[in-house]
Image 1 (cartoon, rainbow, N blue to C red):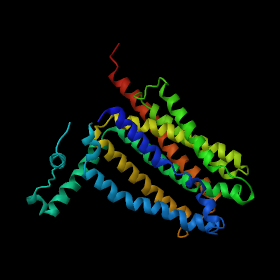
Image 2 (image 1 turned 90 degrees about the vertical axis):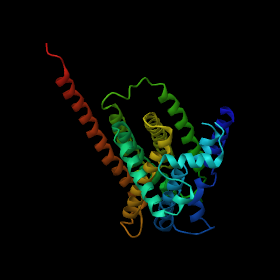
Image 3 (image 1 turned 45 degrees about the vertical axis):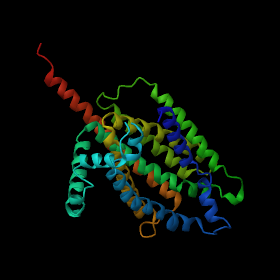
Image 4 (image 1 turned 135 degrees about the horizontal axis):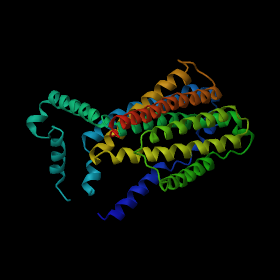
Length: 329
């Protein structure tokens, strides 16, 4: 298949997958006359299930996808081979097989698969560049998902839909547009990301910016102020997460790229689940919507301090290394 056609199909799939016109009005639907739930019920009992279900289903889907070695995408290319032969070759690469003698030994198969996953994780995260960007990818995605999940509840508190027209979908669309523009603009900046401390400092700045944005949103009484700062929050996230994805991909082979993204997503959802249970769920603190966003600001503050400390350490370590290796006068 021609690469242009393949690229178009992948982009079309991505567009259709993300085309969810009703999702921007989910809180309005649940709290409206159709379901007649209170915003507290939606916040404490409905939305937490979203996070829990996502985490539960990610595990089998992620493991199954990695087990099959992404054969549909690889087969399209990225030469023609028999499908059965292709699967056999890919499984043999990780010490598994579809042959009859191995299929009778499920315990050994699972053991080899588990050992393979551990070996892959050790290899992937031994690279410091991959590790630092993966940490940001996982923890920043956790914060972004949590904010995105509950932003409609905050909008409903600030300006209930029954009291006027709401522009949730327009705000989501606008946030996507400026995210694309900021990503394109960021790509032209002549930044040397291999310099010690640059990546960590950028991550810290983004996190500290998010603190300000989330606190203002939590305290705001103007829906338009909240709309504007949410758009800025989204644009910042998508810009830096695109950069993180690029830096991770540059350091990995294509076979490992999907695996490490899956692991990052699992870590992100695990932290998000813990945050949901602790802050949102009735079994935890069960705080109100505005306080939740204050907590999310504090969350970004913690990881921002960690990345800032990592930046200082990287610069200090590089300076010490330079002094040790500098030739004598």
